[in-house]
Amino acid sequence: MSSPVDAAGLDAPLTAFADALFEARISGRPVALPDGFAQRCSEAQGRAIGARNVARLAERLGGGIVGAKLAATNPAALQKLGLAKPISAPLLGARVFASPRVLPRADFIVCVVEAELGVRFGADLRTDGARPARDAVAAAVDQVFPVIELADTRIADWQSAPPAAIHADMGYFGALVTGAPCAGWRTLDLAAASVRLLVNDADVRQGSGASVMGHPFEALAGFVAERGAAGQGVAAGEIVSTGTWTVPYLAQPGDRLVADFGPLGRVSVDLT
Image (cartoon, rainbow, N blue to C red; front, top):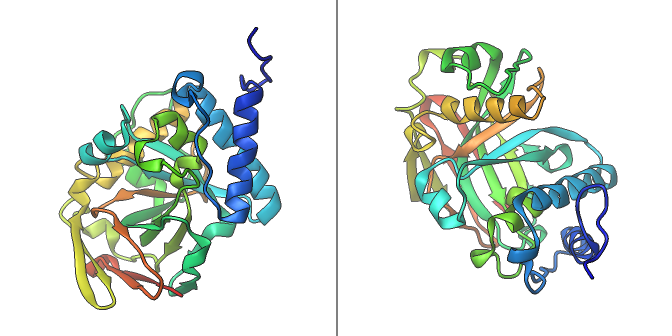
């Protein structure tokens, strides 16, 4: 006999796994996927686990939900993560920090560093699920700023985890460090813009805006369409990190991380 399910479609084993993931967020100790997880848990159920834990963490940590992070916004990441399309996950305000910032490396299990472009919406933007034009997205954005995402996971065997587990673990969100807004971003070609990721003053990664679906606002357009298909919009004041420009870097204690986006600005974080 199958286990009863709750309103989110989670049976007792999946509910227990959701609780274990939540506790792993607090304790910093990874948790193994339960036996048969890939067969038992659909992507929709994975998203339900993630949504449940986001709400619990927002209540525990304070700061609310301030926007979203986009992930797997290039073909290499999609293939590596086993995803059919890019995903989004909520940003917890308590884990979004202004640059420069010092953070304990011990706060993270894996600590995957990515250089990204963040935006803040200055106006509401909503569709019925149709993909908005890039110009419409740009018109709704009032700030663009450099970002270092410190992605993390509570899943012990994360490198072989199925897509449902990524959704359950909140899209591997760990923390976001944001640089100052770029005043002249509308005059720049964001697809042609480049970034250098420096670790302890050594140049370790390079990338460009074209890495993100050809243009960061293409990723944003897809996110707006996804929200619209769910009957939701993007609200003024929300921030979105649009996806990595660089190949991920696994950070270590003592690393000083700087993402230099040239005219778009710089963002830095020191890991103790």
